Image (cartoon, rainbow, N blue to C red; front, side, top):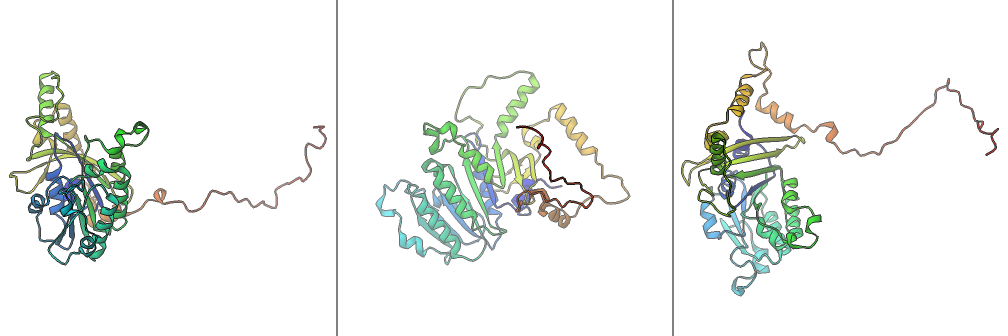
Length: 349
């Protein structure tokens, strides 16, 4: 069976909101752009640039789809008056041309929400919207960022989707408030509303841990924001949590490999990029691979792709919302003996 990450990248597994969580140690831009490049040809693509220059990001997007760029990078604080927000330009922005650019600031995310939703409703095809960094929006305003995501998800169709990069180690605006400890973290809230959560880890860091495990030593790690082996472009370890429409949650850990900086990503086993597997894990993997209960049977227990899709889309009864409140209705039988007299009449109370 193909890994879930491979199905999502190929578009064979529906996921309206894909969230890629990365850190300074391992960037998620490579995986995010690969997910974006695999968008169907009939999709309109909206690029929301908050930490990458549009002229640098646009050449990295493969495909000939119509594109619109929401530029929140060039003038994030509205200091440059020449490219400040233009109501007329935002209102007239459509997908008539191959590429449309609208400049906004991060000081007013509500206005950005209006522009993005207008861009979505101006075209009548499915769309894919890509955020190169949700963290920049969360630094400006956490509530407005979630209102932005809520407005976009309300316009999602069956095949449209959101792809967003979130830097897990960058604090948001609410982190500096006095009562921040009593509020839910924005990172956890994003993971809750996302249908697919992909957490990236550095393959080189795990490889070093594996070497320490073999030697039976634990190397003291000094604190550092960046390391020599950080942000490897050729591989990374992915922890995937995917929520299907039926309510089932699937989790897996695998990795991706890229032979060249401009090549396609290939989903591989995590030990193919980290190194040799520990003996205990190897025994567990071999046991899980050899112990196949469906093997050597006179009948077929495997599902076809259509059967598996129908199974995953089935909503189980206990997941349905109960519309009625609990109530007990009792109809007495003819043989029931009811005494209308009060049994406590003879008591002086």
